[in-house]
Length: 439
Ligand SMILES: *[C@@H]1O[C@H](CO)[C@@H](O)[C@H](O)[C@H]1NC(C)=O
Ligand SMILES: *[C@@H]1O[C@H](CO)[C@@H](O)[C@H](O)[C@H]1NC(C)=O
Ligand SMILES: *[C@@H]1O[C@H](CO)[C@@H](O)[C@H](O)[C@H]1NC(C)=O
Image 1 (tube, rainbow, N blue to C red):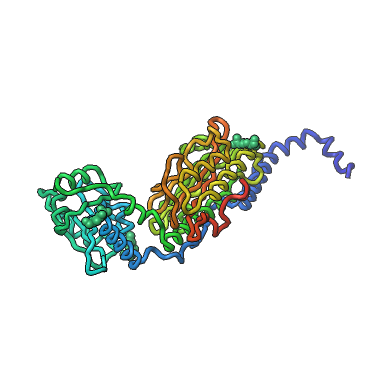
Image 2 (image 1 turned 30 degrees about the vertical axis):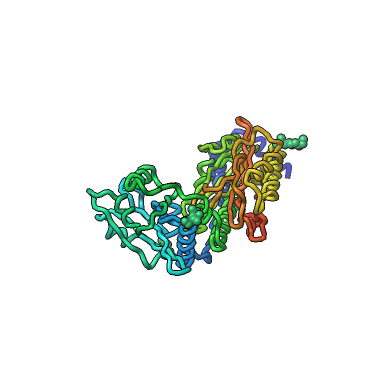
């Protein structure tokens, strides 16, 4: 063996000459091989969640009728004449039309719900006010969930609000409008008939949409589960040096692969996450960095909201950051244990804050209602006197934000079960995170 090497050692110039030509080629070939090898084993393709929610039906025609009649019954109890909404979450709730179905413009298109009483029975009459020149398109395109719609229209030179109010039967009761109706429409309705009370729908009406039905809970569970599965799948494919924008694009595609609509995530690495609503950029994931994903996506119009602060295989997360992660997790647990039917919303916020020693680094409210809107009433904050009821759904998202150092947030939404307890909407896929490596 050693004698065989001798000639080479004695032949140094020639040997060097060969390696000058040979080494670069070998280097390139070996690099290419390694690269292919790495690419093969680090599957950079986007994970596919498949049809996790394919079996979940949208809201049925019967349920829309139930909602409309519950509203009509509530209007009667309140001695009110009508409820009016523009395309948006409430119109979608009662009659299946969101702003995605009909864009808002300066010309009002309104849903008008009036109660019709026949003996003890109360049912809803659905009327749509549309601009005259848009009437044909409205009848063709609006997916109104009602078999009995009365159409009224207003010509360009007419006052649409007078048309709306004049269409109401003689009943002198108040007209309630959805809280999201635009101010010029509210003013128009008020000015049309100054003797008629027009005001924002009271709590008795708002709570009809706040409290979710079993079929809504089913949709909300699935959309939150699929969102969490997407985060877990993307984490598996992440590697040191991946940029926020690449990871964010992977998340978007994975959420779409799960059959969800309008999916996307705030994607923040390391101390970028110390701004709770930071924008993210092309920052690469460092060895000591957490990655925070705050994701939302839609299913049948209902939204998810899930946040995970994760680490990847091989990450070396500083001990104090890991400790904080577990503190935030502890706060999330304290909140879900406090939330119950009958509890005042602010108590839940207070419980989470207390678990974090009332730190100044937990800078935002604990949570928000969620459903047809990502953020909706009621809210979990220190001033909220709302009472938690069966069917209420909230986010539970404590966080810790130290600018220039670290940002951590953990978020799962929950609902109030019929038995009065709070249950995570992500429970079907394991619920809360277990560790940064097991989100
Ligand atoms: C609600 O609208 C969607 C389209 O946005 C439609 O597919 C669905 O059939 C409608 N539902 C009802 C009950 O009309
Ligand atoms: C509705 O009208 C009835 C009879 O006039 C009255 O007794 C009741 O208090 C009214 N209800 C509301 C909520 O105003
Ligand atoms: C809260 O106090 C405990 C006990 O002193 C401590 O271990 C923990 O780190 C504190 N948490 C925060 C977020 O300051």
